[in-house]
Length: 428
Image 1 (cartoon, rainbow, N blue to C red):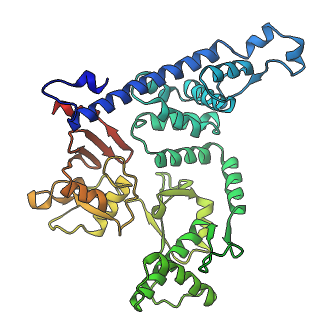
Image 2 (image 1 turned 60 degrees about the vertical axis):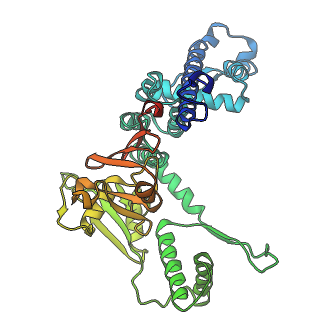
């Protein structure tokens, strides 16, 4: 669809809604074409199975110089012939490495992620997003890929990259714990702090970068924030980033001991207990929207400056107060439920309290209750968009939000992510 196709005397070419409709229609056409390419790639592999090599075995093949079977996807996907990969890559205008990667994702979807594949071929999921999922699951064992496929299929169109990454990590922990532990150990060995003292700028500045354990990083972040605030209280006019840098130097000069009266920022974790009394091996870390193994939690308990372990709040309970202000218990419940800012596509973590507000979906002045079903986290930028930018939204059920943009495009947001309902603005 082009602007010329859409133009009528009643809808001139300079109509913003018309331009937006044309862009969305063109994107749908491109998505459909990519699905067809993905299907053709799978069919191409089916026409060139590794078994075909045995039927036409040659001296070159047996000596390792000719066509060879190659495994592109994870366990459970068929092998294909190497030269078939070469030919398809060239036909698609890709390098061999790019062609191999594309076929790996196609085969991963077809044979190891059947529920996601059905969404793709049914037109419910763009091929590019499906390939992103497949790329993540390639290293998983067969049971891990099946776990991701089952859990992601229902929300596959709305799941965010961060949520997908956490799901894949959880599959690795549950179905290949030895590999998860190996990766954890490798990452431990990769921790470092680098101070570029040999590359000093003309004005006397150097770069510092580091890879830290989460417990150490949270304690360092807390110390830097307090140090920056203390300098501001003492009259410093520098910007916050500059004060943080000065605070880091102060820490070094004081032999890493900060003389503050306030308690350090705690690491907050939620441990789920099964009905049989056993603890889940996955521990959720509130501060960073992530999770770790229970073994890692035990190690942190011996080193973190302050740690708070909380039971999981009943997210199904209705909390209600007869006041505008949102109490801590309600705020914590809804932020745990929603995970992130509930504006379409936003992924800002809900627990960034200084940057995320507890918003009444139906305004309190219009009768909206301060209750579980009417409170959700909105980051400051999107709170302003709701208040001043022409966006409208409602909460048809707790944790679900229906949004309408100024141009009439509608979305549904929940803790899994965003669903674009593909409303044509020209119809409004």
